[in-house]
Length: 203
Image (cartoon, rainbow, N blue to C red):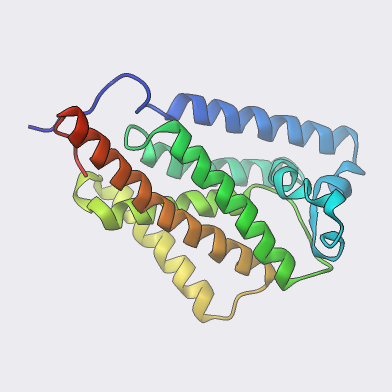
């Protein structure tokens, strides 16, 4: 019989979603009331030779160009976080999110020097990659719609790669690749911790 602990640290969903909502909301309000912040907080490859702008690797996901952009990013972030709920721990999940955002941003900067990148799209695709990675480790513990999401995400990423990615797409692909590796790591870590604790858990 398989059992899943109902107490922290396994239940990452509430804290993670609350954190994303707060950060996205603050970033949206900053961009709304201080329009110039979009440029100074967004990611721009041509100025990344200056260490003073490295902070933009952390701020660009928080800035959105409007309610539609914010809503789309929110949905793209919500779905994979819900799928990973109760399957991974909060700290490893945030580690993967951060790595996907930073490394995806670096890949974008290396691919384009003049385009400005804002929004949490790379983080969302990093989370999508984490779902795919977790499923390759133990797909049988996921529901049908969750597997459908993973297959769709993998197909979109594969199609993007085959069609010749743009600068933004390069960032997405790198963020997703980080997510895939992170998803396998998070599921493997959980399996190891479960074995040590003597609990019977999936994966």
